[in-house]
Length: 364
Length: 177
Image (cartoon, rainbow over the protein chains, first blue to last red):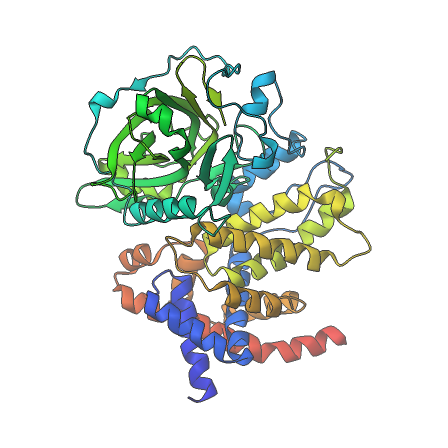
């Protein structure tokens, strides 16, 4: 093909990428052309640079900073005021100390925090004589009875069950890590955690409620006809096979706490968030191996400055080998059609497990 | 960080680099909204790492490296639901996109070329680039089908690119003199 034909095709395909109308096949073709030669890549890079300058020029960003200020950087990103609000708040508040949440007692050594590496969680007694008491909350922990066992198959979208099965496979093989998640050991429990993969510092004007990172959930999938929008993010898979004795008695309690928030929204109502637990055995293929699925929900407000807490728990059914802990977001009605204009987050996720006494849990 | 604030000199360098940083990120992540988000994240990381920065070093190279990591992290997280270049392609583009030296002259050339656009193209360019209208919104406002709008935007970009390439040598000469 003549070099100028390549150039024309690259500009056409790159233009489609920028206008977000490119198909998967066309994108593959673009990547192929870029792989072919550096001159093709030069055409692409020149076009991208041009695009960045067009927007910079059109939005008229000045390049000034305040003189004689050692403290303030007023970033001149006028067109991105809402997203830069996070930076300005951080600067003006002197918020550069990205520390872990402050300790308030012995409980914090055992509280799972997305920013703490698993090696820091040591010496945790999971069973029997655990002396740790979870931070007090005036909200009673709702506990689901296995008698309400449901055959409900969680609608996590096309990837959810694939991820569950892949995650269980990783746990069985004790693989260390993959792009999907990381295997960690806490006491006798192995868990697959996706926290590191999902965590971000800040986004769209939303700051973490504590620490330096929060979990960003995927974009909602909108069903225009049904007027619903939802997404499901798997946080952890717990391997409870080493707790078989306890599981046989059916006296293992799983509690989860999390906080939820969303970015600025043009809709009238906040989203509905949910903490979900999926108890499985065997290969983890829902249906034949599903022992139960439970959810606790929370209706969130639309103020990106406030985080809403949700606490939930479940008495795991006898025979449970794996538990999938997920966070869900959903919207329904006309607002669902606007759902993918907002972004959704969760933070301060605490997972605790106790064998015997639901009032004396151990977090990890 | 024990210090709560960054220095004035650091902030000056960072502000001046914003245009080049955004251009670099967009080259690797060809979506304006995502590129803006990654730019914000990069700025936060750069400020957080202020004390690690060696003043004798190359600020742009250091900042671009951090931006590259932020782009890769963003793509890793979002890859499930979006189309992105492979990691290998992103690394190749990252290596080759570092030459931002001509940005200022390119911007000057762009201003001239933009003014020379035909009127009908200027109307659409204003909607897309200044008012950030989506293709669907442009279709509704101009009463044209999406294929026609997409084709015109493609021609606008192609015209501007060719025009900027033609104008640059003269502007470079002018700058040298």
